Every structure is written in C-alpha cells, then in structure tokens.
Image 1 (cartoon, rainbow, N blue to C red):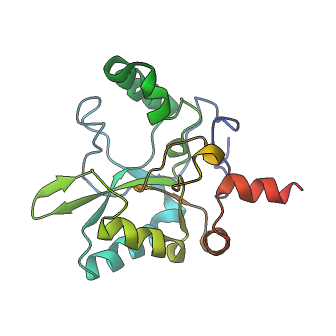
Image 2: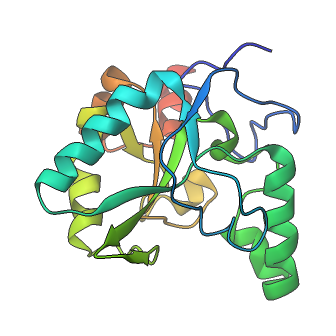
Length: 195
C-alpha cells in the first residue's frame, strides 16, 4: 500500500488496516517515547519524510522563543497500539478506551501525528497542560507549519477523543490554515465537503 494522503481522516469510523506501515519514515530525534520506556525501549519517534522540514522549523522556532518542545511520540504500528491499549486496560480498566485509540483508529499509525513534550535542563516532562506557554504557542502557531491541534477542547463529541493539548497532526500548510481559520476539526472539514 502506498503512503496515505496527508489529509487522510483516521478515527473510530475511518480505521486503517492494523498492518499499514508508512513507506518513507525517518527518526525525528533520539528521545524515547514515554510509552516505550516500559514496552519497547529501542523505538525512536519517527515521522514520514515529507513532514521533516515542517517539524524541524516548528521545533527550531519554538526553541528560539525559549519553548523546550520535543517530539515525544510519533509513528506507532497497529500492533504497538494494541500493546499500549492492553497495558492501559490492565491499569485503568474500561477507562482506557476513552484515553487511547483502538489499533487502526490511531493517527499515530499514519506517521503524520505527533505528541509533544518538554525537555529542558535534562528534565523530561510529558504532562502537557492547555495553559502551558508551550501548549498555547502550539495551539496558536502550529498551523503555520502545517499542523493542527487534532483533538481540541469542546469538540470531543465530534472527534470521538478527549481533549489532548499535546497531540498535533500534519495536514499540510493549506489545509492547516483553513482548519485553523474556520476553527473546525478534520471531521467537520470532511462532513462539510460531502454536503
């Protein structure tokens, strides 16, 4: 299977095959994903190669402003997503289904989604909150780099996922600008497109 279009909609109603793997990916950086710490310790965050100049520019500009952003999590295989889900179910029971996507329903499998965290003075922090200066900057500026806040506050019924101020999705410059200016989700964009 070829790589998916960058504007692909992946959610609980539009699932990928658990076997889907993007063709051309690269390692974003060497930090370990927070999940990998207890599942697979040698996996590094990876994204599709066409995202590279945009994520590099975003992180570079954030660092120039004193915002210590890092890519905490990126590509996850469908099978790896199942491992994460199983682990969370063992810890939180049915609440896990509200916290993490089913295998095939996770945008991370596209190689186009990132979870951000902070790394400053040797301290790693993945507890991103909506009123953090970094999260505010991302929400207001990520679209300039082709990224959207994928699961915004107040749109949970539409996206099917809880608000996640750390989860961003690359959709390209043009679409990111359109979604940001209209304050709509990818689901709403496709709903409007089919009318």
